[in-house]
Image (cartoon, one colour):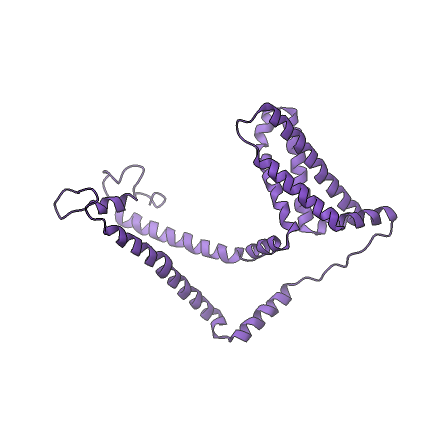
Length: 272
């Protein structure tokens, strides 16, 4: 950074800087970053977590007691599995066997991967013929996804929407259909109003999560950690607000100069 470069050019008090005169100062900055970021910060976080555990009492438990508490909390959070009912009607029974067959699941996974691969080939200034090709391919993929949703509704009826992933797939397909209709219509006003629907094309890649148990586990873990992350973010915002308020109280009267100007000052809490 500019600070390291300035310090490496330092000479003595009251003397002009000389380029690369004090290269050893770079080691000081590197050592400080390593100690502060990789040691002190981790130590502070560890002490904070230990203090929280002591407040909740979990720090006083033994290893077996903590495992038992986790197991008990996991059992209490579990939901009863809904029994899978096989339809008696021969049409629904055939569709049910089809959508639950491993070949059907693997085929849909391959189609989603193919769709993602084609999306990566899009660019800003691509040839017109490739735009037409991507538009046709987009229609084909949307049609395949729509058939998948229809088959699941036929097989499970209203129970198909008990699964959050099916609801997610339905919303993605519905938004993709609306985006396709607006794109083919050519209305500038409608396209500008609902341009955000183009993002749904990227969201289709998330459908791969339900096909991979490890990815589902990662997503579930991230979802379970959201409350703790929000608490940490709230604490950080409170800390930033306190520091900004103190800076506003102490340094709001500094006159404008080289570093302090109308864009960079402490005159208000927001600017600080």
